[in-house]
Amino acid sequence: MRRSQAIDSSSRPKSRFDFLRCPEAALAICERVAEVQALLDDHLARGNHSAADVVAKAKAVLSESALLRALFDVGYFPPNTPPADNEAPL
Image (cartoon, rainbow, N blue to C red):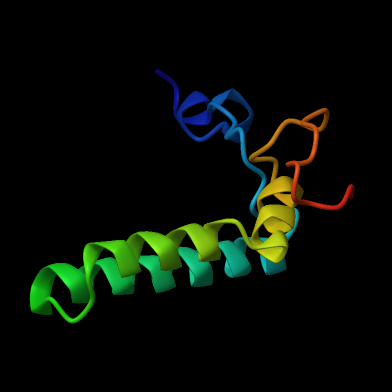
C-alpha cells in the first residue's frame, strides 16, 4: 500500500453520527450519560441507591427533551423519526 493511500481520509468509513457538526450536542450527550454512569457506579460500588432509584433516575435523565434533541442533532435518530408521545414536535 502506498503511503498516500494509507493517509487518505476519504476512504475511511464514515460514522453514522456527526459529533463534529454539533459539538454542543455531543457535550450534552456526554454529560448526561456520565451522570447516569456515575449513578450506576455509585450503586454498584457502594450500594448508596436502590436499583429502583437508579432505574427511575436513568429513565428520567435519558428521556429529557434536551438530551433527545441533542441525540437528534448529532444524527442518532433518523431525520424522519416521529417524536415520542410525551414529547412536543421539533
